[in-house]
Amino acid sequence: MLLKLSKNAFVRQYGDFTYVVERVKCYDQMFKDAEVFMRWITREPMEKSKILQNIFNVYSDTDEKEIARDFDEFICPLIEEKVILSGETIEELESSEISFSYEVENPKTMDTYYIKPEEMPEGPIPQDLLDKYFAKHPTIFDLQMDITQACTERCIHCYIPEYNPVFLPFVQIKKVIDEFRKQGGICLSLSGGECMMHPDFDEIVRYARLKDLIVSVLSNLTLCTDEKIKVLQEAEATVQVSLYSMNPTTHDAITKRPGSWILTKTAIEKLRVAQIPCRISCPTMKPNYKDYLDVLAYARSLKMDAQTDFIIMGKMDCDTSNLKCRLDLKETRHILEDIVFKSLPINNEYFDPAKKADMRSDSEWSEEHVCGACVSSVCLDADGHYYPCPAFGGVNLGSCYEHDLNWIWNESPETLRIRAVRGKDFPKCVHCKDRDYCSVCMCRNYNETGDMFKPAEHFCKVAAINHEVVDEYHNKLMSDKSRT
Ligand SMILES: C[S@@+](CC[C@H](N)C(=O)[O-])C[C@H]1O[C@@H](n2cnc3c(N)ncnc32)[C@H](O)[C@@H]1O
Ligand code: SF4
Ligand code: SF4
Image (tube, rainbow, N blue to C red):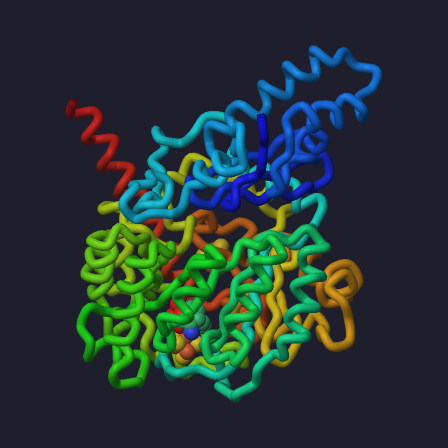
């Protein structure tokens, strides 16, 4: 029997843990001490007997029958999940590959950002195990590359201060991708500005896939030609696109580019025909207040993921003029009530009522990282500067022209400074009653107040409202329960 790793599955070794992720069925799992069992299961098919022989050679003083039994027990669920493909011939293996399809409902990807407490899986969740591992052993899991500052739009809320036509050269991009892969990286996001303006966009996507990375593209899709769709399809890339309204005038008023709505919407529908996984992001501001309901309904009609977000941040250079379009507190309460009571998807787990059961004590929180910046993720801008997380341009970790990623990750004084940040560094937050309803964020703080440890008043007020709304939701649940 032949075995091979599916084209949709990715494997990384983190210390004693083997992390396995399958992107079509959204399967992921962490295995302890499984490195040897996975070592010979690659995208090149290999006879199972040969794999077993290699494993026997490693564990030469263990009974072979016992090893074979353990191996079968290990691979069986992975074969069922299509992480590992098995068959008698290469053709049989190839034909058992699955591809993403909008026709197949995947309960984990479709509108289920809210997992209700009663639907929570039992046992440790792979993401929690990963977070715990990375907290102790910082490892670059995600890299976002803003390959250009140039953009086809001029969105009223955008955190990017300048749209200079700077393009990170392909030769540097390849170098960084190689270094990222060497460090154990798995998820590469291409963003900008508008990343499709980069003259080498197609080659960059192809190269990243060749290097066994999961590629996602953050784009407004205004330049998404049929050729680009083919490139994305071949690289099995995923897309996140911003769509602000189903009303063309409203969308175009936000992007300040007449005609942008129809370009974006047409491209979204083409991605769907091409079966490219696409998630619609609908940041909500004053001009499109309420329009997210139509955008979410549109996404649902296409069976696409969608999320709203009302967390508009100041610009990367601390200019806050873009915040004029941000929802006021009354509007924010309204949207939070929709999110909490109607379980609408949102791009922030802190607004998830299911989290209420999972709060940490002040002392636990004080000693933990507040996010994954410089712990499991990092960003690179079009000038070649590394920085901690999307929009946190105020901190420069070093340049890809001067240093390799190993230095940036393990030695850059700025990386080590950001990595050392813990909850206790946010004096106002440590004993805050609204902390678990808030997304304590260095970037949001810095962009708005100029101090990464000083929260902007607006976010504190939003957290307090979120706390109230979640409490109202739980009280309602309790009284509904006591009535039945
Ligand atoms: C910076 S854009 C880059 C990718 C692409 N140009 C786009 O618009 O989708 C990535 C995402 O950030 C969002 N965004 C931009 N400025 C923001 C801000 N100040 N606060 C929150 N989100 C913002 C955009 O709406 C978009 O969904
Ligand atoms: S949000 Fe995206 S599309 Fe809009 S101006 Fe910023 S980078 Fe361009
Ligand atoms: S509400 Fe304000 S003080 Fe409280 S945790 Fe959030 S940012 Fe910190």
